[in-house]
Image: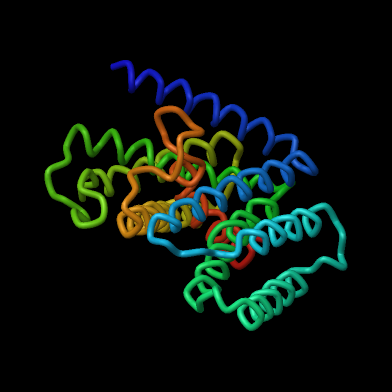
Length: 259
């Protein structure tokens, strides 16, 4: 009971903070995304160190700064420039330092795409009402999947990755995401509703893949949580793993079918 209370309080504070910063948008949102990207990268690097991988942390953190400058309007720091810098820097490090292995280069490159690059898509919807669908679908799915799994869960979904997840919970997460989307859309008069329902259902599935991807990484690295910064939840990546996937999905769905 005490653990549930701690988890609930932490979750509410995090949701309230995210809503506030998203509503304010602009530089505050950019700094928020930068902060969770830096913390997320640190958690990821600490996790892979358990298997003696040695990613080049400095390049990952510099890439985060590049994404921040890009979001703040420094046009010279384009996404192409950031990827060029990362690629060239990793190649130079690999050539000049014999201690750096190809796996370390690959993990560093993967970490930059997996965390700050995917998080950056939150900012792409800054100022648009559609930005809220990133959080509605991700956290709505997580919440309803947890509730449905506890109430009705019997059939294991992916026991080798996440033994507590069930098919019933997964379906409940999708239905919950759709329900919240319908209520949100009707309240703010968003149409066509069928496209938003499709968005929420697909995003709920994508969100669960984000969760499972994080679970697989943790299982491979032999850890339970990415960190402890969020009492009752673990680390930033434990709480934002689904948002890593829903942010780009919602952005591209909205860009292609709703704008």
